[in-house]
Image 1 (cartoon, rainbow, N blue to C red):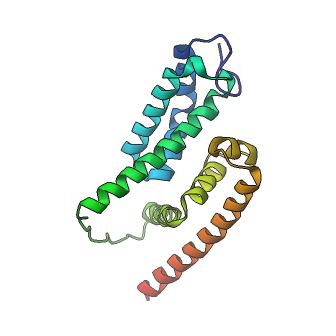
Image 2: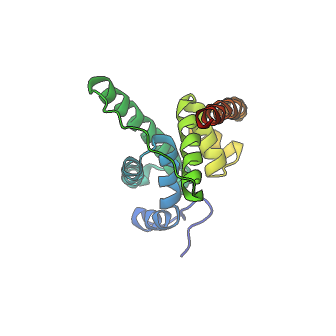
Length: 184
């Protein structure tokens, strides 16, 4: 048996449906959460907790074919919770500073540096813009799917995507200008 486009099939037990969803979508959901929380371990916990929550509420799902959408929404919401928790902890614990690492000239390091710059810029964006951009460009969701996942209108998705993209473009341009000046 294969899951339908939504990830489940009517009549499947919670165990069967979630086993299939897990096999097919675990990695993408973890990557989505990593984009939001920027920590692989936390992201894995977030996704695991989302699967457990959907499993516990399986009998109450109005449409089991939308289980993947429910999972995505749970991952986004739990990622938000993780970020809130992290902010509270950061307010009460002194941060240790780590000296910046020197970048080498090889391509892997440059690619990592670019990725880090994009992730740093994403972190600066308002939460909703960051979520919309992650869902659109990482998971390649349509405006309707993003709207359903976040519980907002399609117009709001368009607005957040437009503003987030413009802000990201400006942040990255500033970063690369500073980087060039530092190298000179």
